[in-house]
Length: 382
Ligand SMILES: [Zn+2]
Ligand SMILES: [Zn+2]
Image (cartoon, rainbow, N blue to C red):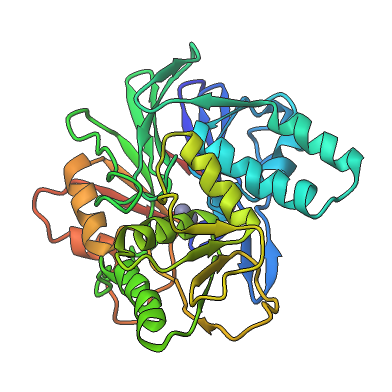
């Protein structure tokens, strides 16, 4: 019994948002990620009730460790709430994830918006419990070991490799095989035998979806060209902070004509924090912050969802993907060749004719992988 491994998605199963997974390695109770999601403008959260009414634990106080793969809110947004319930759990993430977590879960609410002092202290106490881990380092908890691998995707993102007895389980979180503006691609553990991969399958049902590697560059070029050719200032709204940083980095690199780039205070604070951690984002000479934007045509970057900036701006949408696509997933599975792949964080088919990664990989003679498309609140023995 104490050698058995169980898995349950508490959120982020066959949909995107509220990623939160329970993993039981014998006597150890782990949580992988604690995110929130948004559907039709309404925030949704993971469902912990199904866990504490399961045969495994009766209270969240029995959770031993919580791991956060990266700082996107669909993996992080529920952290403070789950930490409050799981009061005895150690909490682990990389230094950069911790920094971005602090910004998104603390600074935004307490420094900028000034919600009450009592709530601020409570949040601060929780964040002080976070242990910062480094890539390629291992922690040995006695009952199991865990190693942290770079996941690509965004700065600070990690994959987790668990060793439990003779068995190895890899949780990918969100990953990218290719390098992005701010990360090298993920490290694929190809030479060690892995039994089970729990993987982000955002595009596991989209065989025709091919990531456009140049989408980010397209957006950057749009922004620069509008200012250069029309003399109108451009407004870029950042939805996800770390994506915004990728955008700023690329914009700064391509800005050969030195158009002024103006960041609002919150965005600038994050840029400065990243730079303090030796992640260069933009050069000093053409950036402004704080005061009123310059009279000259410029690019203004803000994380305000709406708002009036007192002058006319042309708005440029800066959506782009940092996820691997269908062929990346195939390549990843081929390299790791696990016995089982548990697919989570999985968006719906685009059409009923779409084949899944399972149907496509079955035709691959070398592939020995059995696929599980994990449904939320179902228990799987791995
Ligand atoms: Zn992500
Ligand atoms: Zn995600």
